[in-house]
Image (cartoon, rainbow, N blue to C red):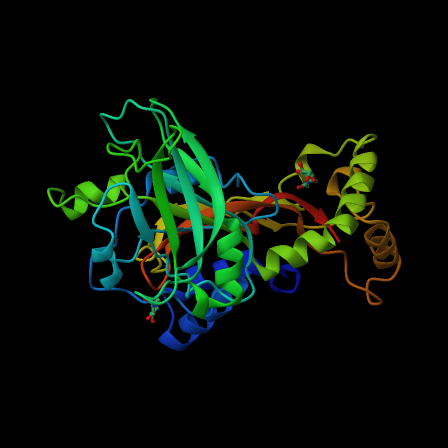
Length: 369
Ligand SMILES: *[C@@H]1O[C@H](CO)[C@@H](O)[C@H](O)[C@H]1NC(C)=O
Ligand SMILES: *[C@@H]1O[C@H](CO)[C@@H](O)[C@H](O)[C@H]1NC(C)=O
């Protein structure tokens, strides 16, 4: 009886795989359930335009298996500047207003970090400084000067690689009061006594007339927003209890018993299950991976419960009672006892690339519970 003993995420995936051969209603019910588990209100809309390429920084994060540079974050969202009418007021290469539209960030996500990364320009030789400001209130021509709050200040020396600045102060404000997101002001100045405008800036802030869309895409500043969503927060707060439980299981493993080989086939163990996102029809919005090893748990939990079956004291007692009186209680269930996260890259509705770490997506160990 696997149905009675299955677990949430893997169970929904299995249902969705199986549903590919079934009617539309069953299939969409399975999909709804899985989207809810992933904390998504709906499947991102299929857009007619070809999706933009994944920024290099996001690709690297994904390859690092979602090791986030901000503590407690489980999601990374990437943004480029949204062109607006105001852009024409910043014709120079040393001063530009960047606007990032964060309206699609779900309300349950808390910002844990926000970096704006700039690409290097060639040809600059002097010592310069990059200043990043939050535009708290935009200025009015001929009436009032803008109110700016300095977020970060970085020395710029001739070098290779990117320049990363911290914009968390502004991003927190925008998420709580989106109507007051007036963007960031970037300035590059000479690091001489007068702080004059840099003539040949070390970093690229604005598109040149000679550049096409594609060339500029690789050079333009990128905002990486790291957030923790509601589910991750709940899981972290539960973490304490889970830690003590794992410690107990590890102690038990110290003195494991032998088990007979011939039983090994039927008893509770991890079994292979590969989920192919193309097969479940999700390959159009999941950029990577193409699929993953979810595994599942199946098998008998026989009396006496062996130590390697990762049973709880309760499962040992339940198995004992079942062996004496099978009508009184069923045997313990073979379920995942240790799960691992996976990282997924996908597009949100505004075609921004998002990386999310999903907890408990892959079975590491099974046991009788
Ligand atoms: C931000 O994007 C949303 C759609 O995701 C759009 O409705 C809204 O108008 C945009 N806001 C600005 C200021 O561009
Ligand atoms: C019990 O858990 C450990 C660690 O999670 C795992 O390596 C082992 O395979 C599990 N036992 C079974 C029967 O899956």
